[in-house]
Image (tube, rainbow, N blue to C red; front, side):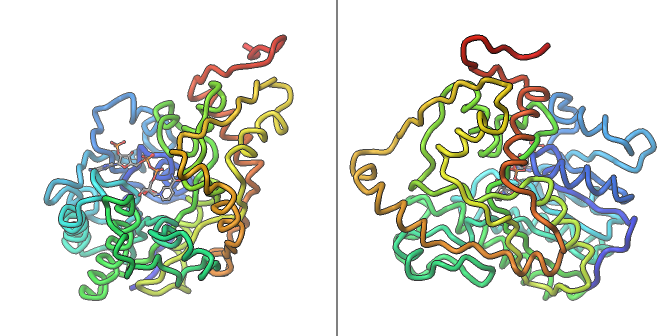
Length: 358
Ligand SMILES: NC(=O)c1ccc[n+]([C@@H]2O[C@H](COP(=O)([O-])OP(=O)(O)OC[C@H]3O[C@@H](n4cnc5c(N)ncnc54)[C@H](OP(=O)(O)O)[C@@H]3O)[C@@H](O)[C@H]2O)c1
């Protein structure tokens, strides 16, 4: 039940992913040893960028193949680690039995290691704000750590699109309970917002979903965001820093959760328009948004936007515990676009007379 020592060994699940790879990158920069867990270390397309990171040649960074669907999956990777940053997705958030099974696989590997002091578990703002009845946002508009979705609503089911939110709440509770039962490690939850920022590897342009939506904007077509919710964002680099500072913090306790967001919120159309505003030299041909929703949802657009406008986003707690100063969304969008063009090789649609500088 202690922070991880500086320079100690940390395992990161989901290391080939968008946020996980930034956690690996920042841990290495801070002098830690990193056991990076990916599903298939032999998949060069997804993992070569990790081998290219400083620390790989000397062995400070090691790669492990692990599929959390398998019992004992992280036993090798967690052995000798003081910290675990558990960032990987699971294969199916809609199946509660599967969620319990795969959380238990990871918990068992933590317990078997007998060296782990702290696990930071990545949940989501979906476990804070996702409501089966959106009017609940009007009733409880302050989005902070103690806020959970209305779990009593009978419409809160995977069939009605709440599986991800339900799965993340279940994950939070399972890990916190397991840590309390074990007594030798603690579990702190991070609930990241919509991550925007630079990708580190080409395959990440299809993930996110936020960077993949920006890639679509560059390529000339993008869709309205679900329920007309504005993007509520965090820069992926700040999110990674929050994960690490929580592993290091002397001011957190088992079971606590922290929302990682800058509190910037912006409608998807304004995100798209930001590309040309921030990078006028590029000459991006700003496309119009496509609204994919059925007529009955489109008829409620003004009402839904008005409900989201009530939301008050708070980050007092994570700022106090981590001291992170969150970047502006403008900076995140600019760096995301530039990485999509260079690392992601996205072909943008540009106005006449503009072309990419080669
Ligand atoms: N991106 C966001 O805006 C956002 C917001 C809130 C919360 N989150 C949470 O943050 C975490 C990371 O998100 P991300 O955007 O970085 O996702 P990502 O880029 O899709 O990366 C997730 C990683 O999870 C790994 N994974 C999936 N199924 C797995 C399995 N069965 N066993 C082992 N690994 C598995 C994948 O590994 P391989 O590539 O090796 O196959 C993938 O690289 C997730 O838990 C997500 O729910 C993300």
